[in-house]
Image 1 (cartoon, rainbow, N blue to C red):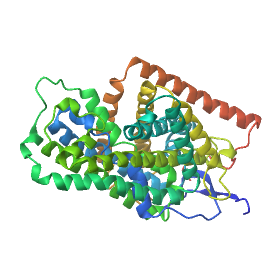
Image 2 (image 1 turned 30 degrees about the vertical axis):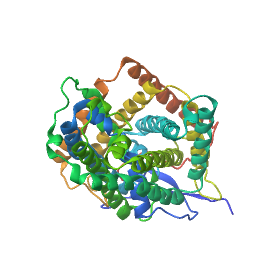
Image 3 (image 1 turned 60 degrees about the vertical axis):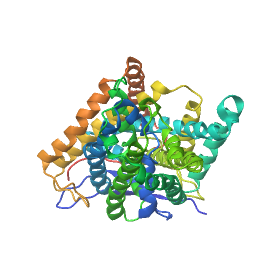
Image 4 (image 1 turned 120 degrees about the vertical axis):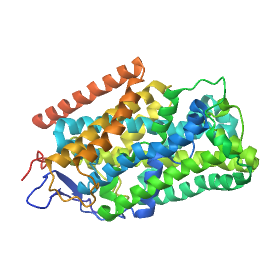
Length: 470
């Protein structure tokens, strides 16, 4: 198969206003993501099932947990999805949030956005094989420690990375299957639980003697309902993105919210246990109490499948982000190379896999917290970019536009900003230190890449212009 050519394509706007951000768009045709696979890819970017919502009950009790998963989507998930829908359809390329920051504030902030988002994403990737093996060890204790555990993490990471290499369309359809199989036991459990539900349990403020842990509670909500914007780096791979992308985002919001809320209400209403037992993985135990060991086994298998889906979705967005940054000349040209067989960004997949694999064997609790801190910094920049682009380019053609004027948009962005400030304020000193070092490294990388361009040490796409109004 002949090697594909790259041609420059500019993002234009109507009414004599244009944003000449130029990216290299691949001429070679490949199978694009359609609506249903995209919905499930976004679903796995954010959730992957009710796994992990249990600490919200453990930290604050049933009522606050239910209210949290009922209210938080409206103040966090919906605004993030709306912003992603507008900006992704306005800039339909693989640069995603990097393009948004670049267009709003210039190349330095675009590069720093890329650093923050990539590091937070690739560190998250490392946690999924570990989580997968942690569930497997319940079924096969040999994987609990030592060489078998290390080999299982290595082999599972390499196999899942190879699946990602075989093509985004394949990954999308795999995500559909994984989503259905991993959600099915929770639907069955919720239906079986209906006769056993006692509604008064829903309004419990928590067990007496158990101190509320608001840090854990809010971090749990943040973790379970975050990362809607990550999929913006896949826009260039979507079939008719200007129509498909908003539909997929809003469908995923509904699927995710109901996927969390229905099992949570079923279990809190049907099962009465010590609040301290609501730790990660309790849903499987609850399934055994409600229906039997067969359903517990299915949920544990579903957790493994969910981890696979999370890994594939996150690796896809990280690798295509690097491709998009190369097209914008933030990274050397070779980062935009695609496989001749599958048209996937093999350099991005290889680098993301190598970094995540090196972290899979570490105790990286503080590093993951730092990744969340970096993601929060990126979200501040993203919210600011969204508002500034509305002000800077008011006449730009936006295929999807959040139906609000500037005062309403400011309020919409202010509410999640307050939450971001809270999440960052409760971070530990070590998290501040690690995040600071990573940020300094990102700044150094930007100037190093600039030096490489000036000295012509590496090849870059040279047709990217500074954002301006024509």
